[in-house]
Amino acid sequence: MTSMTGYSYEEISSEKAIVSVEIKSVNSRFLDLFINLPPFLNSLESYYRKKISEKVVRGKIDVYIRVKELESDMEIAADTNAAKAYLDAIKKVAEATGYPSDIPLSMIISQPGVLNTNKTYDAEKYKELIEPVFAKALDVFCQDRLREGENMKKDLAEKLSKLEECALFFKEWQPKIEECFKQQITIKFNELLGEHVDQNRIMTETAAMLVKYTINEEIVRLHSHIEAMKLELKNNSAPGKKLDFICQEMNREINTIGSKNQFAEVGAMVIQAKDSLENIREQAKNVE
Image (cartoon, rainbow, N blue to C red; front, side, top):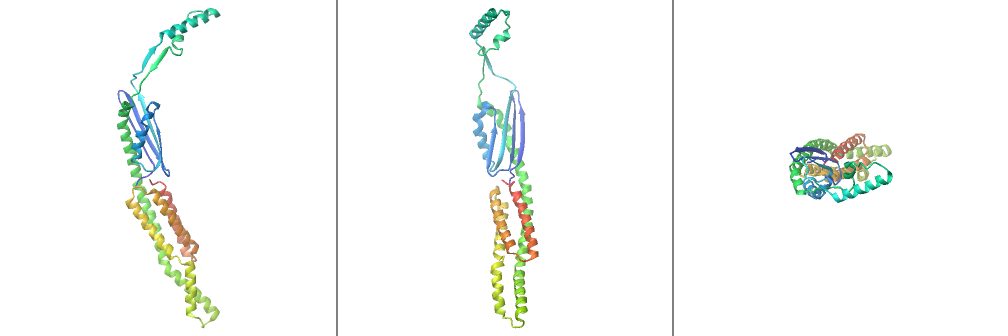
């Protein structure tokens, strides 16, 4: 089992550049992947997106890849014709306005087009620099999510065990519920008819009450859902969506038991079952 929350940061310095990769994630219903690269490396985004998608199923994941160059291979070209043209034009303006003609070089070279920079970016070269940092960051990130996921798995198993205790209580109480209905009906008939009570009539009325208030089917389905969740926790490496669905089904059965209930003891256990289920649902939201 894997958590949807995780974090990693790796950085490597070389003679050419400092490369850093930061990966962090939070909960999300689907895989929501954001990759932030230097603009000149945008062509590599699909590559890193595929790498992460191969190891991550769900979660909102932010990836920041930074490259700080220590050696520049930038080429600078001077347009001397443009420089002369600027100089001549500035001199004419100076003469026309009566300003001194002593023009600093900085004014000339700061004009557009006098100095032109040319830098080519070899994406594959940068990819080679980034690759070991990215691979390590992704591995640490996945390990962090896996470690947290194992803790969550233990916690979910404990919470599920508490819910199972509630389900067992309902199962044990089912015969008592039937007996309580029979006793209540018998007492009412005795009050009305005295010793002339028809046992068949009592059984008929008891059966009618059980049709309306029995919780046997809900108990059976609740146990079935508990077993299904156990299997998901055991066999499914990314059970998040299935757990959410099973929780919905469990909630339906517990609510029905609560609506049919006529006894304080069962009502108290319904409250405890709802509390246990809510704890499971909250934790399941963090599961991939």
